[in-house]
Length: 609
Image 1 (cartoon, rainbow, N blue to C red):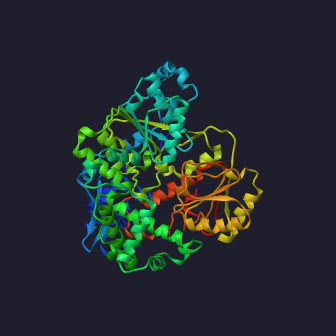
Image 2 (cartoon, rainbow, N blue to C red):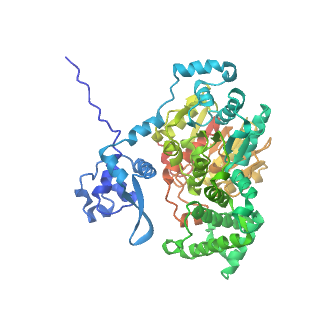
Image 3 (cartoon, rainbow, N blue to C red):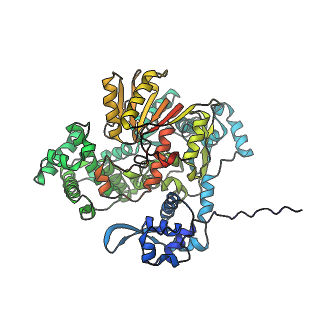
């Protein structure tokens, strides 16, 4: 008897149902109603109130809410959907279909573009011949790394998974350009995100006998331009704002409102947010929040608006708005510029004086998943012969401060016809930890990371009765660990979780270093010191033994915030839930051999698989 094969429906274009829904729903909608409509969720009263269940696309997409939201964000980034405001609230962000989105419904192409980004890197016969030409130079590298190092495409995107040796590849490519291709060091610009990463790259290149290459952060590159052309850019002498300048500006802004800083701090933070924090720490946190809000508006190139009208906390929102409005004027009159001003002002200068744009043959950018619009525009205006970007979409975790994952996902929109290379082999973690990492982030459909180490590590997921018990467990684990203390990380989602644990460790004489969103230290643990860190503060580091505490539905995704002002302006231009899952991925990917995840409430859905 002939076997009849079961037909498998092609679901590659199911995302177009989201676009169709926006045609059928007769008014702009938010993400929640859109997802409920597609899921057929009658719990949303708007469904029956507006008779949306009579529309053809009602209950047509059996995806999770998270997946629908994730795809909605992708369609927004591809400009198939756009935000629009509501008549009743100009700050509410609703969704509207664009002409590009209408075209996509009838002639879908996005799934093909996504497939190209997610395709495993192929090593061709031509690649092997080129590897052989540089055999001695490339002998210690795997095939994908070799392909990235010597690639001659005009635009290259290297998607480098956690522990895949991206910094080594980036440094080796610079060495290749100089020693093998005879490119002058002065014609190469490498851009990192932190001074620490810059110093590390300079040190590595120096050990290879390479100097005079332009290694900068985005801000140091722009600051050099501004200093060289200060009189042409500004009407007065200017400088970068210092910590003391910020404190003075905050005090003047609060006094200008007839308020006292202590009184403002008391009303701004909740009792739980104030717990275990000194007055100075609270002042610093408030100050950082105010400047973050101001930089958000500058980066988006929009004037700060009074967001207090639509805030649940109108009094504090009004204070924040008045504070940043005062600070903006104060910086201008005092000739001060912040980090956002550095890039925006340099871009403005280049646009007015294109003859002053430095000429580079090659520009290499590290951590490309963290770039924002201004930084991408800077690379485009420099317009080098070759762009080589390295990053990992799985580790894009700074959307709340202006970064946008769309720039790495849609790299080809800014830099056409790129060669996309995946560095898949992880040299950091054991086999089972890598498998766990892959499962956590599988929705992104990127190629799985491969293990280099054959041995199995230890993964423990542990439920404990209370947060106090959780802290006691961590204390005892540290005491009993056979690893050096500097090889132990304890990671948490929020600052508050760490300050409570820090107090307990102090009581028991456990020497440790605290790295939080507020304590922005670039110092790493010395021998004998345990590291306590928020996940945002630990990115780029690794340890033999890693504990992720508080893995509950309250913390992953995070329902609370250490930064009330960020919530007030409702930064909705990024998918917070998807970023929270990536943040969890970053936490677990720090572990080399031992990973322990603890929770004392309902465990996060990220652990359900």
